[in-house]
Image 1 (tube, rainbow, N blue to C red):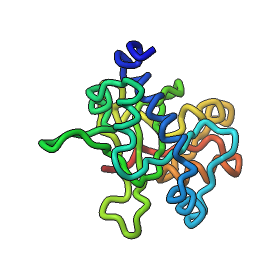
Image 2 (cartoon, rainbow, N blue to C red; image 1 turned 30 degrees about the vertical axis):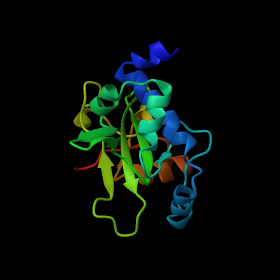
Image 3 (cartoon, rainbow, N blue to C red; image 1 turned 90 degrees about the horizontal axis):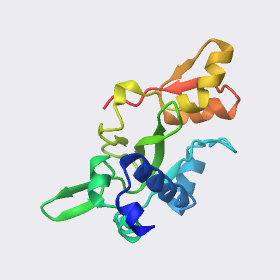
Length: 178
């Protein structure tokens, strides 16, 4: 198993990362923010909103699971500089971005600090993610869009969550402007 994870291609690595962030979503910072902003995460959904804790928790998790850090740098969740490798996201609510088939291919993170310099960060384009080719929640909304012959395109990730929570399932969002 360790050998298989070490050779994990980017899509498999994205699934491992998504599970890690999802397991952190009950962190006090995340729950306080969700309550404060009255963010509704639809029950029994595929949104898998998560949380990236401060520090290098993802890096530690990846090393523990045997995932090559080069793959995580390639998909943009780890960065490196002359001081070493570090988590790209920290203290952020994480929104996994999926392709139309439901495969996680990228991540967006909302800073939970008061008056952040940069509210949202998105992973960069990679071998599996081209920003202009994806709509957030299309994997969830596509059948409703087809059945209703219309789509609502809303501004952001939390807007999509709110629309889906009131059963407007044919709603999607662009991947941000940055």
